Length: 444
Ligand code: SF4
Image (tube, rainbow, N blue to C red):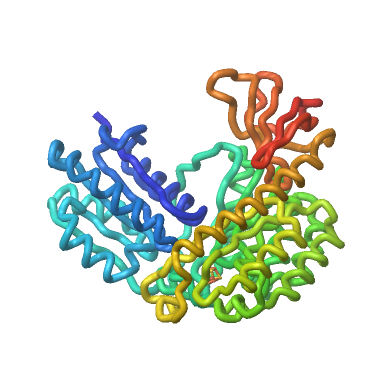
């Protein structure tokens, strides 16, 4: 009987893609995926250290595995991801969670097959974590979650040291993949039926590659090269930093037809003084000017963002600046977060931590504002025809589909059988805060 695996992933798209790579390596070892942890021979938990909530959920999930491991002593429990780059987490796992067999970090994913074989054969416990590494390992197998969409890592790490963020300490300094390797990978993906790629990195727009003639390749140049690949319909990227949003990249929205009219541009706060304390290296006016430039080049561009509420020292007036910015920019949507202390970051030591009840009260006001604007923006789409990449069919009715517009809006719509994986034109008939509804006008 084939051995089976189950992966639980916390966190961002980088982690989702790392899990696809882990699944690819396991498939190479002849493991098959299991729908439930209860039946899996290997359970992997890929962790995220960015928010406190993901920490809690990780330890909660790990606690549940104690019983399964007791019932099935042959089960192998492996944990990986950003949290494993923190010594205090490893110490806690060793002392309180003895049913964890294998710990590996973000820099040692490529060694996972070898580590797993060692744990299986020798029944030893292994920890394989590197503090930092310049190495980029190419050509690891990937088991994609979607046949027509793919994540492509273009860079790793971050040099920005925002004062609330643990990523530079867990993922290391920025290093960009070789441009030719990226182009080769994307061409292979397109041959394999992929229509949409999402370029991934903690700070994709600070990408610095090298071209075939040794010339420097900036992020906008990379987009231009990718746009030339025949058969690639859509290019997205995640996530970008406002300070690195160049004019060349803004112009790419006009010049590169496959670059989707959407940007996720985390603002984090609408207050210049808070942005300064966050070490974001731009101010409120800089951000507004960037949005104006983007909209002047691409009037229909969808702009989404991340906002942190209750950063240390945030006053009501500073929070009001954020609310005013949200009203002024009218984001298509926003991920809103309550600030939580991350051990080892500068903001951990900041005085004036905002009391929880104030954070929650501000958070609720922010969410109400963000949602009201999202509903209003979505309502402007009613009556329009949008190109939608069909991602899936509803479980109850195989002619009801879901997909995304170029502006990343979720659409539920009726269409002909077999639409999955195609790009179809959908007339939008209705909308709400989080999605659009429509009917197919014509096939691709
Ligand atoms: S840009 Fe700032 S928030 Fe983003 S990963 Fe780097 S340090 Fe963290």
